[in-house]
Each structure stands twice: as C-alpha cells, then as structure tokens.
Length: 186
Image (cartoon, rainbow, N blue to C red):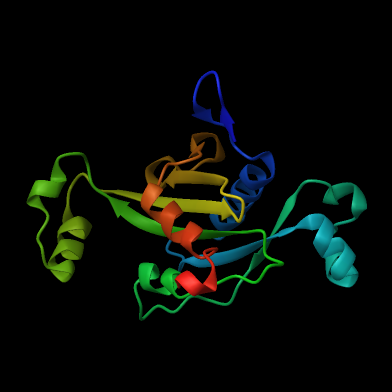
C-alpha cells in the first residue's frame, strides 16, 4: 500500500502484527538461535479449515478477521546458506505470506572496503571486528506484495528498542518475495 500524497509505503497491519509476534516469540527464546521459517496463513482460513488446531491456538472467528497466523515450519538446513534455501521454496496457494527470523553480524558503515573477498575470511573478519553489532531480523512478505521487518540489536535487547518498518532488509525481502513467484519462473 502506498500513500499517493507522500509516496510512503504504508504497512499492512496484519503482516506487521504477525512479524512483531514472531519477533517477540523468538526473542523469548534468547539469542544464538538458528534461522526459523514461518508460513503466514489467513487466520480466518485457518479457523475454518483446521478448527481443532485453531482452538488449540486460542483462535476463533472474532480473532480471525483480517489477521495472519504464523505457522513455524521445519528447521531450515544448517549446511546450506539461507539464500540458497529460500531460492528452493515455493509456497502452496493456501499460504498468504511467509517470514524468516535470523541472527546476523552487522558492521559499521565503511567496513565494506576492508572486507576480504573470501567468504570464510569475511566471516572471521566480521566476528572479530571491534564495532560489530549482533542483530536479530524478522522479515515478512505477503503474496500480494506487502512487506514488513523488525530488527533487534543484542546490545539493546528490549521490546522498546525493536526497530520496524516496511523495507529494512531489501535483499532478504526480495528473496522472500521470490518464494511466491510462479513455479514456471523457478
């Protein structure tokens, strides 16, 4: 959604709520967690098609209107880069969106020039950089093109310090969006 007067992308409230719910859930598990993948399903569809599951989750028709329910998927493979894993995912029609939660090291601006070309050396460089920041990212997209992200710094690990917006990690958003491309383009 874009506001035509300001050209600012407005967040999809259902997606924003789902991403922030995932971020809060993952934060409750602590740091040093593996990447997690979530299917986002329209809550109303979930209540109608899986009433027992919905009931066990405390969902009913009153909670269903216009919301998305995150459904955690099986663990992602740890022996492949996340980018490669996302390139292989195609969601069925009944999935309205997806989200991923992951932790990364972020270096200060200007560090790119010092970064070694070799991926192993680059990882070591980042882990040992004195100004590195550890962050948890949750990025979500919908089949209709809405996006939302939440970011938490380990150094400021509290709910009030979570930064959120529609396009905080454009590369990850693009990869997640590609999971909804037609199978013919895969």
